[in-house]
Length: 396
Image (cartoon, rainbow, N blue to C red):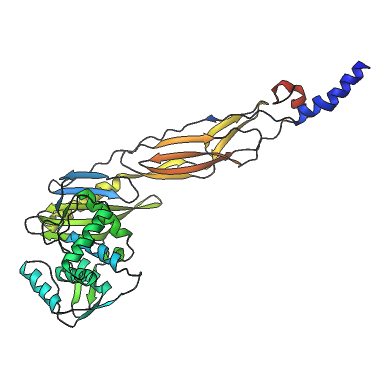
């Protein structure tokens, strides 16, 4: 009688608890990868003035040499002018914008900058230009008189422009930059090379300015055919941004260049200040870019199907957690790549089931690769459960 009762109780309680009880989850054994650093870049930096090079999407500067104190920007100042004007008088991409009629005041500006020895372009009262044409005259031909006319048109006076420009500079945290006029003819218009790299990035991010600074030549009515003062355009991927020349301060170039690294295009932004001539700084930038280009590397982080963790169940089933896609990252010079693997505990699961990730970080940029089970983990079945009751969670 008692034996029969025990058997009934076993069937009623023990067997269901054993067969249906939850299994203990298997913890992941992580296989943390080590990504060896690439070779360090070797750059030929100019030995005068100040130089800085950065790349969009990369933290800080890639390289810097010479003076880190503010130096005269010369006509690079016109990049600030156009950005500030576009903030006050925005243009849609492809639009010409308002029409601006030149007056005797604009003719006076022409004679003022001509007397100072600055770059100018012809003007007379009654000529009508669009806002976009004034931007082109300022950035492509670097005409001081048209940059000043643009600023006065947008803000009503030179003084009002300077107030607006200084407010904009402060808002962009370009702390080393000083603005006294819209042209840069005043050597007090100055900035550090680091802030000028940041200025170049802001210019390239503007969908109106970026196409203008990459234009090699243009013809504007009543002015004629004009060539971009940036002689490096089209060479080594250079597509901008602005030259500057000032007696006593030398030749400057704020430049940008696109370079293909594996399957990615990197945009380099740099500046060289204080060269003896534009021919000298152009040659030095050409050499510098060769080194910068060679300093970028496409580093493989993961191959699809590569294992980054493994699980071994209580019943002896071993399954890996693998990358669900291939991934790589672009690094500069010998930048270190760090890896962090996360994987959740698993009891059972299907092939490809998401269970974690592999994250790789280099200089503030992170690439995350999802991890999934390489194979299905099935329940061990009643035979194993009944023969291993002590290993089942909640079993007697």
